[in-house]
Length: 364
Image (cartoon, rainbow, N blue to C red; front, side):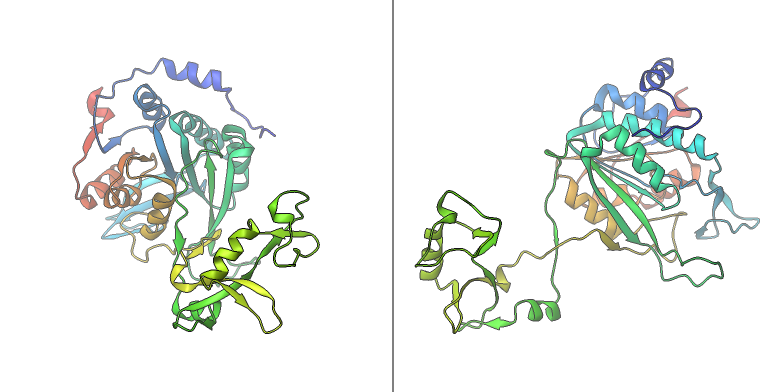
């Protein structure tokens, strides 16, 4: 399915239009912050970084028709006073906006490695259009998640609609079979631990139990054979070769109920944590240093989940630099891009690591 709108270029037309733009980026190693138009910069980065970036996170403008200000130690959206400075303006038409972002996403796809992932942070008013565009560029088969992010406390404004306390993150892989996935989990708090692992062994270890069988029949093989005179229930098969059950039983890891029903013990002290779901609560900072600043703990989750210590992480709508700062703290090499003077100044004031800085305007 393709989304049709005015001004949509073919990929060939896009690359032809970019060929006339001279690549003037200098050579650099390690982390780099680049000031300038990210379309031109992304195209220039292809020479050195095509297929080499493992993780891209972007929080682009949301097509809000708002002007975002920064000043007096505070950052907000529409409030303005004499000392405020414009951080950025988000005032394209819908068609212009969709093509603006689409062109950049095409270049990001080329920069992603085969094990790479992209997280596009957007709101629900424009996000449905971008889901179609992301399917078109990255392939519907490489869609991984639509993540709901709780961004604020419940709203009580007087409009005839439900309050808005969420936005969304579209998560795609370059190749769904190869993308980095570190299976980061969430720890279980003590109350849930006691509820989930409600039984206590003779040695004082908390445990719960699971069936020896799993859904689905197996017509052939060991998992369809009997164990100690028992067969798996209809429509199910043994979780593993029944010979493994003998080993577990000898180790005391099979729990036998009073009526002789065996189940496998799962101990709390061996539990790796609970699976992270697709609804996240990471509220925006109350006193942001840059308009639309995002929660650093959310960025930590994304970077830990979808990159390696050897990975390059990129944010080409760097804003206040949260992605770059967290990537630095986690030991990743990063590329940050923004054209806003306020954004660049904010990033420089808040990064305490070594990095290169390149300004396109100074090179021309």
